[in-house]
Length: 366
Ligand code: F6R
Image 1: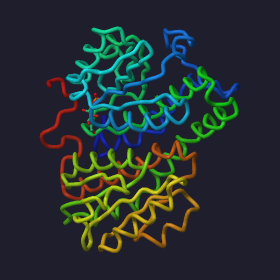
Image 2: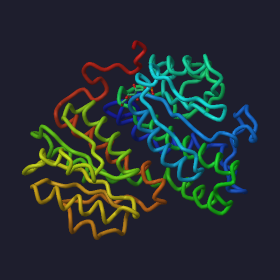
Image 3: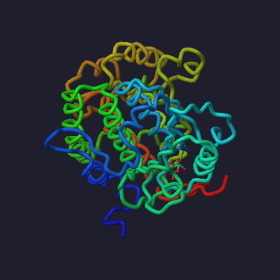
């Protein structure tokens, strides 16, 4: 049942090229190079009117939402707020007639996410679910559903669900941009072309895992590890950090790189490992300055850069190069070595990768 892999997590990590392909599936019109979402019940005219979005979820699904926020705002100019469901359910959210709520849940059964959805349904706000499980409570109770089609996820640590949620959010953002006219047809076509290349690029990252394995093994005696990044890289950092804590029990924090000097830099000392994500060209120079700051305090830095950007090697101890893609699509590639990092760190410590202590796959109690 683990298909030759030693754990469900590793199997599911390797299923990502296929999972992402399934997510895109029939939703990409290859001839017109645009997105189609036939499952939406609402009209394009209705969708076009939404001018405010709340994304509500827990854990890894919330992290997918953070990527979605930046993408939706960039491509559609609609402001998006991302909230943790356990907080959101007790808030008094500001809904207008033009507010759309998106809940994201792999299982579709997470208690807080479901409660947030039910609270919202007491008002007139339209709720769209992004979920992996057909027939789940979230899928049944939301007004609209986009299924992620990642296939069953068994390991407690979510991997292919995250990447397929992120792809679903790309597709939704593109569709919203088409409907609102905020991207030109040629711009949509360019993203669609790059999306189509993503599965093969994930495969190449999976085949080339030695460097990340080596880095993970070198963290064996380490108590604490930091992830730093800006903008989309920060959103992915949060996911890398959660995954590492969850299955390797190494304390870690994800920090917006520019925020380090407001306190957290005090924790950087000799040999503290720092994973520095530098995939975003518009803030690349700023990232390098932050890397120089942690290096000056003795950090051992593993950098992530887009292929060809060999310049980063000058500032860090080691670099992982990601296959080139559009900056907006980088998260879906960046997360792959981060998942592997947590997996290898867990294995190196002799832990049960699939069943981390204190955690359940589906959190159906508050
Ligand atoms: C982390 C993880 C959790 C879930 C969270 C939400 O690897 O799996 O953080 O993402 O419990 O679960 P769903 O998406 O089922 O609502």
